[in-house]
View 1 (cartoon, helix red, strand yellow):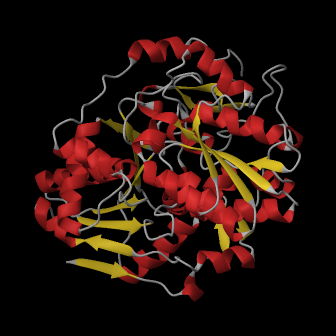
View 2 (view 1 turned 60 degrees about the horizontal axis):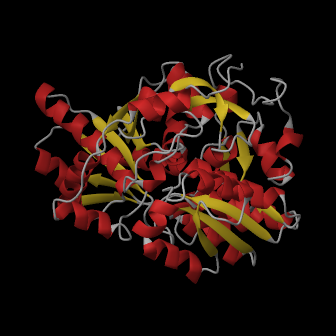
Length: 452
């Protein structure tokens, strides 16, 4: 059986938690101007974001109020359940207690609306008519389409080409909510045309789609850009997940020994982990934090911790982060939301400071874990989330070997109802693992700017 711990709407967090004031001293490095190497100020982001979001990006306030209009929309699906996976524990024959926070109950089926809604709200407040954005597997595009529909705005989504073909129903979901969706790279932007000139059959990447969406926004006065992961304000909005979870675990009478999540840009894991990380940084708890990523796009486990661009066409400021090189295009794995060349600066800094670690998995083993989980807990997980499941199962089996009764917590960041083509490939034996693209990563990393 699964045991749910629920909260009422009145217990939903009224503020987002900003981890920046609690970060280890000297760990946060400012974004740099790629031309001068000097730190950039808020004005550098003004062509893309409203000033309210820019000020959250650079804020040093520990807690930031959630607008009432955003809270009211959150209540459509929040608070989300915390579930003890007792059937999975039994299937693994482990003494560990396994809990997961289930974000797949949102209208879009993932954690992404937690930031899409406030981003749409702040842009609407600033008089913006249209949002341009990118999406990998489609969860973010669906969430932004939903949010802009709720605030009466237009939405343009540049969907990574490999996912555009693999996940047609996520594309349909975006269109149901009024968004126009294009397979990236496109011929609509200078960025897309530049990629297609070099590779007419490009599978695309999040880095390329970011270049296209940000160019679209920067060249239209009534349009702004919205990002679904990586930047500080996105991770900030996601902390409703971890704050709820802390309350729920207190009700359940437990505290996690291990906190796990999948990472592509870092937002879902940060959302769960940061409120618990606060306790570690304050010396109150010695919690283990483990992030799981694909071995074909091993940003943290194989990448460099250095300054790099956030997009493929080198149009953003330079951010201090783990990176595989800004023009690296990962293989076409089904976990499209994790196909990003870099990692959130906040996550990267915590890894560098020794407060987090990471592990990488191949495609077939994460689907093995997904099937084990689905048959025990009855939820079909997204391929991205299945990386976290694999890490949780490995930790639970380690407890079986040692006899330790650890409490394992992971974020089930979305369901896999629109990923059934991937499951079909797995079940028919057609799913393959991609070799670690060492040569391509080496080529991309050689182009990282030598700065900072």
